[in-house]
Amino acid sequence: MSPKRIPPPSERIPPPSRRILMVCLGNICRSPLAEGILRDKARAAGLDWEIDSAGTNGYHHGEAPHSLSVKVARLNGIDISTQRARRFTAADFQRFDKIYAMAEDVVDEMRRIAGRQFDATKVDLLMNEVHPGSNEEVPDPWYGPESGYHEIYALIEQAANHVVEKYGIKESAKNR
Image 1 (spheres, rainbow, N blue to C red):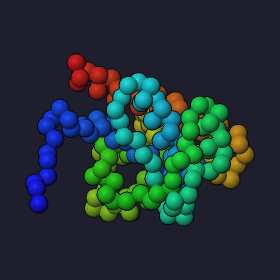
Image 2: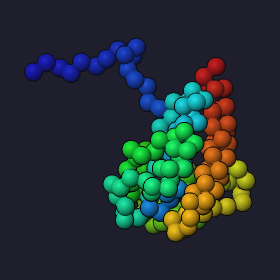
Image 3: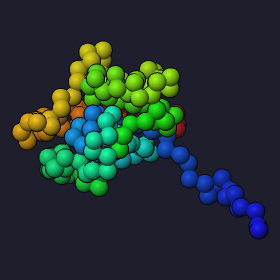
């Protein structure tokens, strides 16, 4: 058996420079939109970020995003149809640099799920990027009409712009 070849540094693929997780309750409405919007904006800004989403309950594990989330994303030029819901785990605190929750009850559930691995320094409500310290939530559109999905798209897009501006500038300065 020959030894495993270790590629030289010039052939190694560097890890993403930032890993961000978006979390809501079921991972089919808000967080898939947040993942898609932030991924699109980071890519457009030339940022090498890993962006994912999860839900604190397992009710929709393996399901595609809600049809209205998919529709609203598509109307804005973003395809989230291939995403699949997954449950948030304690291990996400080791994998991600920043974890954005869509609501306070989601943070509470993340704390319960993670137990001792919960790291408050990595967690914030997404809308605090727009209005720091306000603890505004991204409302859950699940039971409402399509207009609610358009409203949360606009909120998430605004927050995603702030995230890219905040961390993208730091990354650009670091790479100079």
